[in-house]
Image: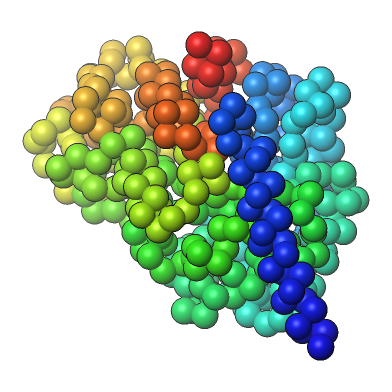
Length: 366
């Protein structure tokens, strides 16, 4: 009888959360969501009044419970909550995991007891801080993610059960979102979309790292559109989920506030779509295109992908990134497509003045 009551309540929440999300996020409202992996003091340098949501990155699992690692992290969370004094509508979300941060997730969420334990701990932590919701950044259910982290096919359904338990415990007023990979292996294998979507407020699409540290061919790591040589893109993900019936007002487009530098093994096509490997990343605030040009890099704009890149035939390196123009186009795209909003990884990689967050804000003010 108890299980029947729980199932009925979950079905009620399916309906109420779905209606609530469509009512609050359709039409005029537009989410601007920044992940934040910086410290407690630097946050005050950024124009956080342009944000609707800021996601603290990251909490982790400890003994199966949502856990803040140390005092410095607690200070950072409190600093984010303090931003509400000048931006009362700001939602502060606590995120679990991240790349390399979810090793215990698969075993912890494989049992009903484990999922319940986590959900109760999440509620306790959100209430303790006065935060507004939780974001799950499990990379990844049911498929390989960080090297050595366990995964199994059952993760796909266990993720559904985890979301159901969270919604049951947190109720309908606290937000639940999750970070979704932008490549086909995640989209096809990690999520039971038809079961999960009605229970969450937002799906934060990681439409970056589409060419990444595992890639053996260079390309755009965060293009808006697909090209004949590279299918993965923002637009491809949106249309894939469209066909599955995922409401666009649940989808949040992901942008990159950092660049990826790839070594190129073949000096052709200005470094794009050539054999190569990832070398290192650069925060947008440290991406000095003037200095790079002096070092022999040339700036290019791919009109098909709607993405910038730089290439040095001397250094045999190509740099893929978002800039002011690509961020402008992504923001307009998210508006035109009726998406929930735009998010980015991560705020501490931006310039403190006249950065990419400012471009998003100015675009929305047009």
